[in-house]
Image (cartoon, rainbow, N blue to C red; front, side, top):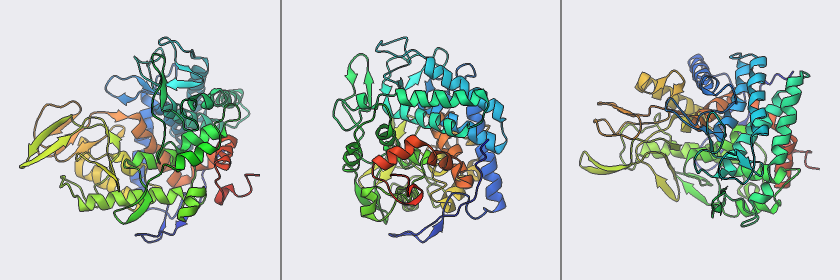
Length: 474
């Protein structure tokens, strides 16, 4: 049986606005207070997945405690979180095997087909949201390529982790391989090849938008290019990277993407340290360094605080997709302010979406990239707001220190004189916290996925070279 804990130290030499820093992968020991904090945060966040998942089918809710449908992306994060739970001793290996097997059996056996209702997916893809009990398509949501991709990352990590002789672990590996091989990536690229469509509706066909421009979709293209059964052409990678936007933001030249989740999701599973495609070879950095720069730039933005939001500062920062208080415009202290409910908040050289709502997972998912700023920010959030923000399952999804007076809301609650706080945890924001803390502490998920033949094949076909890929792209 595999034990993943190990020690590796990576020093990333930065150019364009930052000094060299030890980052991620079981580096120098953290101060005792930071280690204790990460222990608490990681376990509480893991427990959210373990406790809220439907044990009969493995479906993870999109959010909790608000009654919710299941998010197939959250299921992907959950599948990998179970492996972290085993390594940390929070659940037994046997318990994690049972939960994982239940999940994979459900998705393999769930009905596929073009019908608008009574199905879970089509062409090997799955609908974005599923009914928590039946597992069928929720209302009229799309068949989602990106959310299926996140599910597949969790599926493939399960195949790597559960490598024992136990027949149940052998079944996990077989189901995982079958689920991935069934996904018809080429079908998803038929509308405007070689780009991959964002999704499909049985009522109207493919969504008229593709994944273009740097984003979390890196992993989606790599899974599609690496497929042994239904691949897209490797030219899809060059087509994808040709739509990148490279700009300086707050002193950090980078491939821009405003919300931090786009700099985190692919990295939750794939170790981009030291490997480069043609685009990054031309820029002289790797994608890990690019994510570090995006993280550092967000902190610089918060320090500058050009819009004058309450609370922002060197240890209070982080914009990404998350809940917000409501869709409204108010006058606060003589200044007109616009707020949103769920929104992909973020900042970059060419785009700003900021309503004063801060998101803990923005810092939590960036811990491997910049632990020296991410961990102090999270600790400061907990210290400053206490139980208003940090509860049974770690950080609630988001908060806004500017909204301090009672008002009608669409989400959460206002603590008078303190700020607005969400009332829910969101699976796709909980997941990066668990996984990225573990990558920083032990390389767990990165080590697993460096051994996955499909991920390696995708990277090689996309033209990645160097680092841990050396000699593996024959």
